[in-house]
Length: 385
Image (cartoon, rainbow, N blue to C red):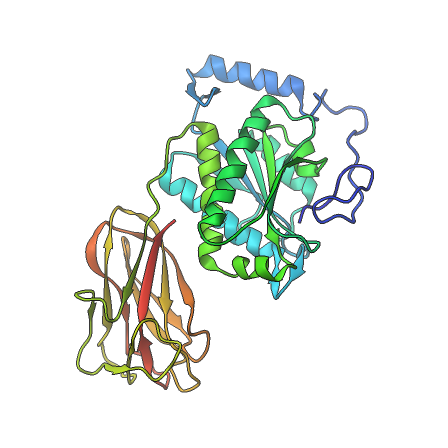
């Protein structure tokens, strides 16, 4: 939810706060219709042209990799909108961190974020930071509230042609990515006198990614695949605007414990159909032991890059409270402990990891734990991000 609505107190995306003034006291640089520093931008462009021959993308010239400023809305003492057990500040950060990682994994870009953790940042800090850094574009990520449904995005009312083009590249790609996971209403490309759009010195767009206080929207926002898709849509829109080329094709694969040739475990691992939360026809279980005896899921990774790794397990109060999951990353094994007493019957993210290409044992569910209760191995899902 944006921090302020349209000028004059009109209800906007999340409404209720008075708009910040669009003019400042004397001494500030001369600004154009969007409030941009005309003289500063002209001097910077001329200087860049003298220093080094620029490369051209989508009609714009860059002397170095494009500088992308990502703003996760709210944070710290400002939770933003809340509803259905969710907080806007956490969702915007999750989307923005994945957006950063996707951009870095697929293109040569320079990225700066207004925050990378749950800290408080003022609106003035965010735009001043982006302006001082000399960002080529700014995207501010928000979650809506107010009882509506769907996705909408904003630019400044008198935005220049570059901003319009950024907006037109972002909106449809984000919407298409969202719809790859669930049904999402298109609320359209809109304009508003938001601080993040008005006070930025570069093309800027603010996105409102569903309504936190609408049950169906909140269910999508609780889905890790939807968060990743939303981040990917933002990345694809930015890349299209900058003329960076298409990203690698999307990739998702699932390996069940019953997938032929894809699961191996010793005779210490039993087979059960006890829980209705199982993925597929059955799942595997084993007693904990202080020795190495992992069950392995083999996954074919098509190309090196960043991938989200998720696991599916049945849950029961008698299952293990700290089941070790070993992920074979490009830089070595990483272990993530999962409490299998609850949260079963759904995909649970172990995190995003940099993986090497190849067909190999990627995820191992280990029995090596001092926690009591059966260790469960059921299914693994891997998705490129």
